[in-house]
Image (cartoon, rainbow, N blue to C red; front, side, top):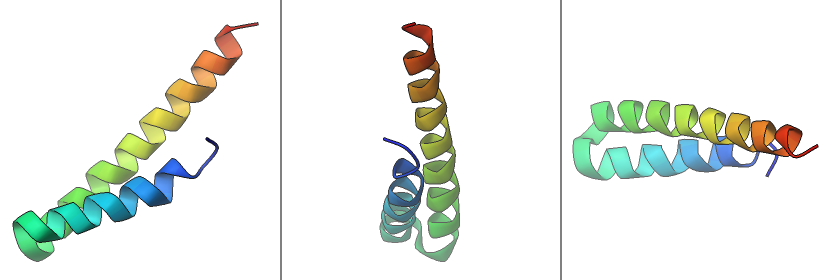
Length: 52
């Protein structure tokens, strides 16, 4: 898991945003993808630490 979701979701969000909203959609999509990557990494770390 690690930090891999951050760039992957960033790029995926940028591509999807560009398809649906052009340049402004690409900015929103990359921002949303970045936040989702941060949240998923934080949840993963929280789950791993909680199992001790």
